[in-house]
Image 1: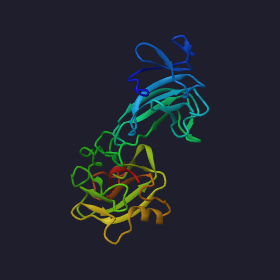
Image 2 (image 1 turned 90 degrees about the vertical axis):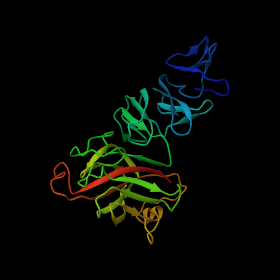
Image 3 (image 1 turned 60 degrees about the vertical axis):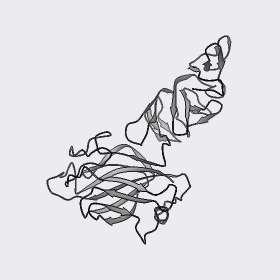
Image 4 (image 1 turned 30 degrees about the vertical axis):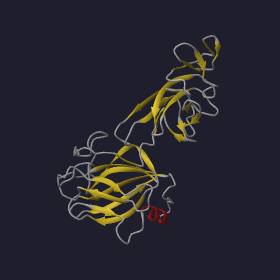
Length: 297
């Protein structure tokens, strides 16, 4: 971790109030010869966990502890400025770890502690993740076993959804076109040849994948069925000629988004797969799902 132009430094957090004989409130840096205080972060509570993590905006030092007030238990330091992580959590943070679980297209910051909620009252029993802004379009929620098991053990190939009855390896959802752009198009491939397909949008990410027909679903929150299409040779696309754009369709359904807004939405395609005996209820059903896309508009 670099602070200013002085080069790499070692950062130490704890319940101390001095370092090297000089005042230092809970956080200090060591440049190889002298200690220096790091002010403005967790000044009103001790630091219990430190990690260098890149959320897509550059590497920074993340500090967690039992501080209340401005930072609510956790803060980000880029070498000169402290920033909050949303509204933080309502109790002490004891551990931080960066890990890519295959869910969001890149490593996220996992935050553990003795808190009961985050973001103004959302329940969280001591374990949450801070999502990094890795790319404008991130594929995630794969049925290849990297996240959870598919309902009938019907594992798909890498980066696809769960396997289907046509043995295509599972449907793969991707987006074509620049982001942010109203011309963005969603394409779901490797479905059954003529499957009825629904393109689903949500404004939240389920913390855990849910069984969904023969597949899994990670799209959550305010759900919108944007488009219904029939696949051609196993491929379904939306929007098509004559259809409104994705932002226009979403807005017409009560979820207002626009290109360049910076809003995050999540997308999956689910499609008809009614072959008897492939993945029967109660484990499965008559449909399957692609992987998911996270799009920053």
